[in-house]
Structures are given as C-alpha cells and as structure tokens.
Length: 199
Image (tube, rainbow, N blue to C red; front, side, top):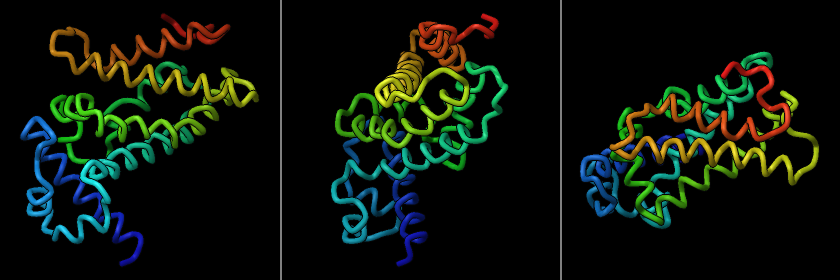
C-alpha cells in the first residue's frame, strides 16, 4: 500500500471513530465497532494503529498541517491577534475534515479522556516551530531557542484553553471571542506585543 493510500485509510478510520465517539459521547466504542463503520478488518486496524487511542491521531495531524500552511501564508502586515484567531478558528484548524470533529461533544470527549488528550496535546510539537517562525517574522520573538519555544508554546496553550472554556456550556462567550481574549492576554504581556492592536 502506498504511503498516500495508507494516509487516506488512516484518516477514513479516524473519521469513523470520531463520528462514533461524538454520537456516544465517550470513548468506550469498541475497535470492532470502529472497524465495522470504516469497513476494515481488525487486523488492518492494528496495522495502522498500534493502540485504540491512536485512532484520533490522523485528525490532529491534518489539523496541524492546515494550521502550519495558514501560518506560512499569513499576511506579514496583518493584525497579529486577528491572524492568530483565524488560524485557530475551526474553518482553518478543521478544514477538509468532517463537521463532527468540531462538535463540542467530540472535543469534550477528547478533553475528558486522558489518553486521547495526550494525542491532542501532541499537536503542539509540530506546531511549535512554525508558530515561532510566525512570531519572529513579526518581531515578537528573537533568536533564542528557549524564548522561541516558550512564546510559541504560550500561544498554543492559550488557544487550547479558549477551546476548553468554549466547551463549558455555561459560558456565554463564543469561540471567536474567547480566542481573541486569549491571544490579547498572551501577546499583551510581551513588551510591545500589541502596540498596534486596537483593543
């Protein structure tokens, strides 16, 4: 099987799993049920996913690819907060993925299941370098590797906290507003970080 076909298969199985997780509201769905929905054998499943929890990895990998591409394409003269809010928006993070991934229910399942949350957090690793490059191109971080890693990590964590807050049913704020608040809070703590942002 070619690498491309393998990636397509992994993504289709991941989509089948996310739809079941979103429907059930939990991760207790069996591998057998995921395989039935995806139309594959359990042997094929284990060839692509050593453990059940890895089934969501292709979703987060696709999300990281979309955000990395958007970071590279972002206008150099755009408002940093507005650009980051757009990059972390569902239409960027989850483009080319089924709408079910953006359901609060599915994302809450990921947040509330430690094994799956680890897979979501793993998204930070491939995103750290591109985010640091994005910040550096806008004068928000220097060449020091520690500073670059720290600041890019803060931005990524702030976005995740905005999603966590949005998942709480009692919050009256929308995701866009929460992402904007998160980016303003992080960037305004850096000297000159928001000098040109109208807030």
